[in-house]
Amino acid sequence: MVWGAAGAALIGAGAIAAQSVFSQREEDGARPMVQLPPQAPMARASGSATAAAPAASASLSTTVGGYTYDWTALEAAIEADTEVANGFFIVGNANDPEYLFTHEKGSFGIDRVTPLASASKWMAGALAMRMVQSGIVTLEDPMAPALAFWTTSGTKKNVKLKHTLSMTSGFNASPLVGGCQLLPTWTLYNCAKSIHDLRYDSLRPGNAPGAQYSYGPHGIQIAAAYLEAKDTSIQPGTSPARQRNFHELFSQHVTTPLGMTSTVWYDPGGSAPTNPWIAGGAYSTPRDYAKLLRALLSGTFVTDMTAFTQQRTAGLPRLFVPSGATNWEYALGSFVECDTPAACATSKINSSPGAYGWTGWIDRQTGYYGLIATEISTGGDRKGVELEQVMQDLIEVAIANRTPAP
Image 1 (cartoon, one colour):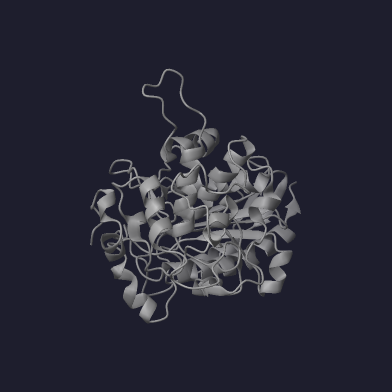
Image 2 (tube, rainbow, N blue to C red):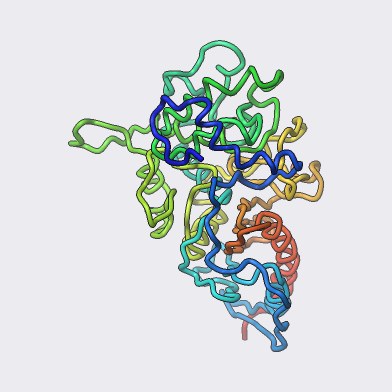
C-alpha cells in the first residue's frame, strides 16, 4: 500500500495501487458504503454478540419540552440486536436542548472518538453550504478558474460544485479509480488535479456532469480542493498571505459555530494531513455529531435546506450505488431515503451511513434527528442501515403517542 507516499510525481500507478485493496469486493459485486482505507482501524469494541441481551421489561419514559415519551420498545429493539454489541444511540429534536432519548449499549460512551467513514460526507456538504451562505461560493460555480488546471474543453469543463457534491460529476467511474485521496501527504489541489487529469472521458462515454449517478470519493475530493481555492478569509497580517486550508475552513464554518470540539478530518492521534480524505476520513463523537444533526434539523444553520437536501440523481443511470441504498437518491453529501425512487421526490428523511455502522439522519416531517454511533469492523455499512430502519418506525410511534406532561 502507498498510504504514506508523497509527491505529485506519484500520480498514476502509485495512486491506483492504493486502491487495489478494494478489487476483491468489486469483483464479488459488493458495493460498500465507503471505500475503506488500506488498513481499516481495529474496532475498539466487538461488533457482534453471540446472544441477544434481555429485552427491557420496565417502562422507559422521558419528559422533555412538556411531553412524555415512552421509549420502551426502542430500547428493547436496540438491546435485542446481536450484531451491534457496543454503541451510543441518540434521538433529539430542534427545539429542546435536552435529548429525547439516549442509550449506551455495551461500552461506548457519548464522548468516544470514532472513525466516521462515509458519515464524513454530510459534513463536507454542510461546509460547502455554509460557504454558499457566506457568499464565498455558489452551487453553480464551475471548477475553473479557481482550479487553474481545469480544462476549458469537452464535457469536463461543465463540472460545477453541485455535481461534485451530488455524485453526478462523472468522476466516480469506479471505486478502483483515482486513489490519491488515500495519500495524506499530497495536497488537496494536487489530488484534485490527479483525478482531473487521469480519470474521466477515457473511461466511459456519456459521463457528462449531471448525466450519471455514481457513488464514490472522487467528486467530493475535488469539491474540497475547490473550497480551499475559493476561500477569501485570509487572516490579516499573515505572511505569506494564504487562503485557509480545509481544516481551518471546516473549523471556521462548522465546528466552531456548533461547539463541536472533538471532530476533525483525521485520526486525532496523528497530525492534520494536507490531503485529508474528505469522503471517509473524519472522526467525531456521538455528542459532537448530534450537535450537527440538531443544527441541520433546525433549518437555521443551513438556511437553504431545500437545496441541501433535495434529490439530485432522480432518473439518472446508476453506475455505482451502495447495496443498502438501492432505492435511495442522493442530495449534497447525504442520501434521500425512500422505499422507491419515485417516493424520494417528497421524502423528508436524509442520512449519511458509514462503513463501520455510524449512521445519522434527520426526519424533517416527523421533526427529529437520530444517531447510531458505533464501530463495527465488518458489515457495519449494512448493519447501520438495517438498524436505522427499525429504529425509525419505533421513533415515529413514540413521537405520535407522546402525552402532555402532568
